Length: 132
Image (tube, rainbow, N blue to C red; front, side, top):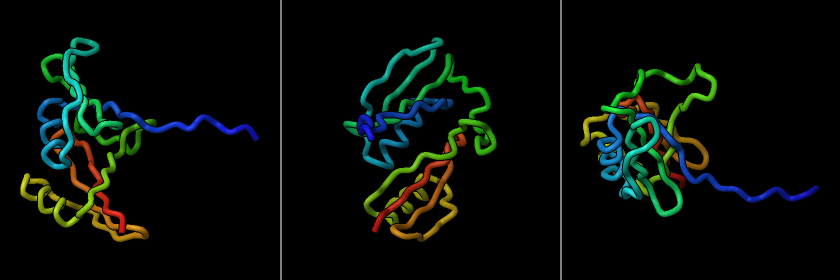
């Protein structure tokens, strides 16, 4: 069998109400940095936030418009259900999430780690996980 090209995920592009504010939250929580920001497609604005090799592209339309940004996507084909982020200390991360006014939920321990979720202003669910 022929070996396929090795691929890696570089980024996800997510529509939000305010790309700058969402990027600031992610930088604060995860120690990420803004890789690029500026005008983008359809007269919108984008902020690329993350690490050296991977990032989230946060997009908002003109004037910050995001059509029904808080809708649920679990029942939609190709909907974004949540973004998973590995953290070195889940308890510390949970304390930070609470300090920022978010409510952690759906805590679970499973092999090989632990996790919880929270939802930010755009309705974007973020999973934080620590592997043992």
